[in-house]
Length: 212
Ligand SMILES: Nc1ncnc2c1ncn2[C@@H]1O[C@H](COP(=O)(O)OP(=O)(O)OP(=O)(O)O)[C@@H](O)[C@H]1O
Ligand SMILES: O=P(O)(O)OC[C@H]1O[C@H](OP(=O)(O)OP(=O)(O)O)[C@H](O)[C@@H]1O
Image (cartoon, rainbow, N blue to C red):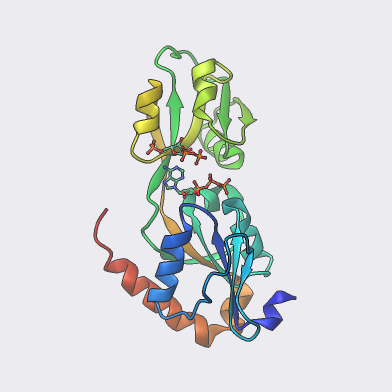
């Protein structure tokens, strides 16, 4: 097991949330390894802290199953994952929302919803007693509303520029998202002396973030 060879294994998502996540952990005093080479997937030396570079949706999986002790991931991905991890800190970065989006001409009942977030969408439908087919897509989800593949989509909105350019409407915000620091429940007990102060410092620093 990789965890036995390092003091702490950190799962970070490639892409948008990587730099803020890395910085937040360093500012909280964690000695992260320097990042080696663009194509490296695992950074760090035995006996120190390791960083795993993962796809967003894989971060909760690695943390829940105990391969990584801790991780950083957007709440949107956490909601979708259904994974049981401890989520002690809202880092406040990477703010966006998961919204219901429709074409202005689509005014009838929603029968087909396209999304990268099928579990989250199914839960929203269940909570509202609604029935619709969910079509899982891998990206550029707005195209489903533009082309008529679906009569609504659930996707990430940040500035709204993508929707505006496509002439689509943000009908309803379903969830707000920011980056979260997550912890494997067993690691929290086993590495308490390392993790408790880290969590406190992350909380204090997140509190002092300028409002975005
Ligand atoms: N405008 C935005 N679009 C998409 N995600 C955003 C945006 N703003 C913040 N985020 C956050 O960034 C995460 C997506 O990061 P990124 O765009 O790097 O991933 P991706 O290219 O979709 O790759 P992956 O397939 O690994 O999810 C989201 O889960 C969300 O928490
Ligand atoms: O409201 P906005 O500020 O326009 O941001 C939202 C858009 O940004 C992301 O797409 P991106 O073009 O980054 O590609 P991706 O789908 O590969 O993440 C996301 O999937 C939305 O389409």
